[in-house]
Image (cartoon, rainbow, N blue to C red; front, side, top):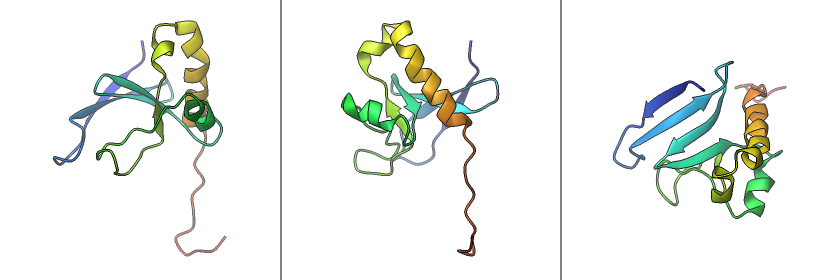
Amino acid sequence: MLPKKRLKLAGPAFKESVRLCANASDRFFALIADDTLYLKVDESNRPDFEARGMGPFRPYAEHGEVMQYYEVPADLLDDPEALRPWAEKAITVAGRKKVKRSSRGGP
């Protein structure tokens, strides 16, 4: 079983609560909000979600900021074998090291 962390978002514009799912390295690869599962995305797996008509998690409402988590297609939720590669890609995305940008605008 994966560890779960509960995150309370502040302010009335935020979703009530979000559950974050992390792997053994404490890398967050999924979240659950309003009984909807979202997986972590980047340029490598986002097209898979978009091709299925899935959109990003929006904690601030429909036209607010988006997070880099996309809704999982409903048919995958009842098929663990079909869901597995989607989850594995999300875990890979979560494990990638973020490139830090210089605050001075230089290289």
